[in-house]
Image 1 (cartoon, rainbow, N blue to C red):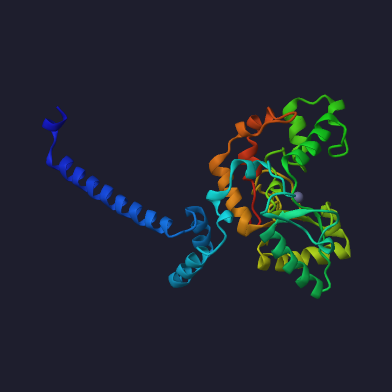
Image 2 (cartoon, rainbow, N blue to C red):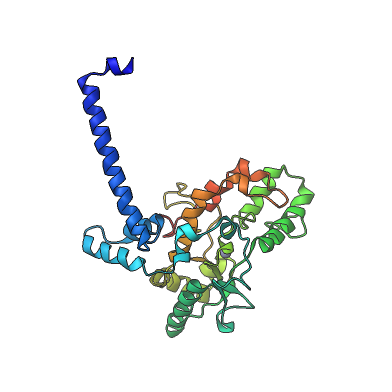
Length: 303
Ligand SMILES: [Zn+2]
């Protein structure tokens, strides 16, 4: 039947379709060739071309070519589900390194590239009379679970309150904790790319002379070293909501050359059903924690 009903328009459409398929196949072949010679993943390329100047294509090509020399494990395709969920052991994982004692308060670990970039930023800040110290770095799933369940059970206060004693419905209880703490499996601190600097209170950076100078230095220079502030203000000057998720955190900085790839991979690979293994995890779905919190970032950290 179909064959008999064909008309010339359909025929030409089919020819066009065949030509398109051929073109796609050709492109695919080209991509495979690029992959075979060790090209980085499409996501990494996307980041690179997106950040390269649009008007200068030769520069963009140069940047893209340069990316082929980057370590492969920083590309999106090399990041596993366990990496994203914080099922890592920074002490034995060769991608991580212990931070210098002068840069951190206590024994802390970061991805090697993050650590290197922070060391450079630390030196530059020091030369300007600014002291930057990391007070929290990589926190694996088990660590975040202790923080979360402490607040969930009331052993630890959340916003100054014992949530268990208040008998709140589960979603309300989770939302209260989520103002300042991540659900296990959703924290950027799992990745070895994110750090908390100097103090865990916005008031320190807004009201003390020392904190104000440090924050002004970071907002002026952190990007030069690859760092951005993912949890920026949630409203603009007009009072409109511009992002979802955690409250502003002036102390939390992310090493974008790696964390961008983690964020993209999270979006591709994980759903709320993967957020499990702790008290209150059943609320992840209702809150849509992946879209509203993990991906609710801005402040120079968004794509
Ligand atoms: Zn943090």
